[in-house]
Amino acid sequence: MVRRELLELREVLEAEKKALMKGAVEEILKWASYKARLANFLKDKNLTPEEEEILKEIAEINERNKLIIEAGLTFVEEAYKFLTQLLYNKENYGNNLENSPRVLSKSA
Image (cartoon, rainbow, N blue to C red; front, side, top):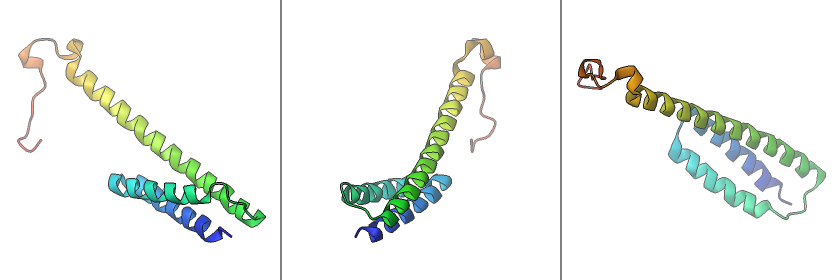
């Protein structure tokens, strides 16, 4: 019976979601590694109907986490594009030093 490992995997996915929401990269990596070990253990196991239901729930949680990851990556990509365009687009600033970006604070 693999019920204990399935329940543990479900808990890991919930912890991973919390880490994703906080943006805690090191914690996300820790959970990903642990998740992979549990998934590797569970592959090719014969599951009871009750365990199959737990596995379906796990798949739903994993899909939700995947969507959170994709949304975060999209945000980072858009922010990078915006910043790149802002800093390097000559149409915005030209070659005129008066129009080039300036740091307004020493702490920036």
